[in-house]
Image (cartoon, rainbow, N blue to C red; front, side, top):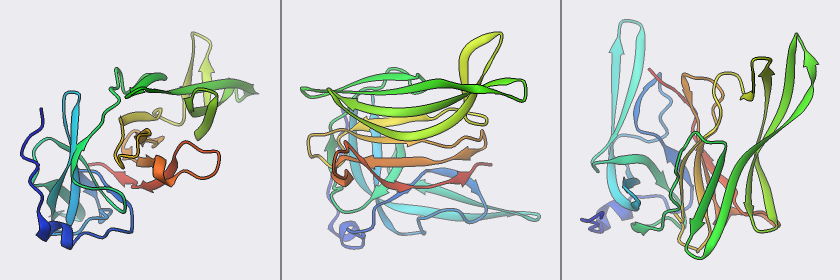
Length: 225
């Protein structure tokens, strides 16, 4: 159980309530961090099947080694997996839809009495360059309502009928739950296609357009070290 959710008025007062943003934690090449040192954000903290958004100050440190410049981003909250901020996101416990395997092609995601599914579907797209090409979609579904979140190309190898999606890696579901607490599913998914790149993308139900389940609220592409 996550405890110690003490609201910090000072942190909240300095946090932008309008612009939705996402900041991964870790060390990255160059100056790709969105967050700035000392800014107030919300840390998404996970503990088993429990989650919470906890007010934190961001620690951003520049590291120079020879001609290489790196940026290290950390939070003052232990066990934080990601930093978020924006309108509709507030400190407190977050309902979770547990993910059995973040790398799986299909996810059954119960949230309260509602059931959502995320699945990757690929169809053959002819042979080019000696490879059978495929076109793939990541789809979010609740009942009869369905939405395409992401489209990618891929290929199949003769020895392995399972498709190889994107250039070097397939999308990875990082978090599923109700971040904006409106009773519907929100997602954080790494949509990068290269192995040394991270591109977490935040999908919020509160940002959904007409006929949609979620809307893309923020993304952050960084190159790891």
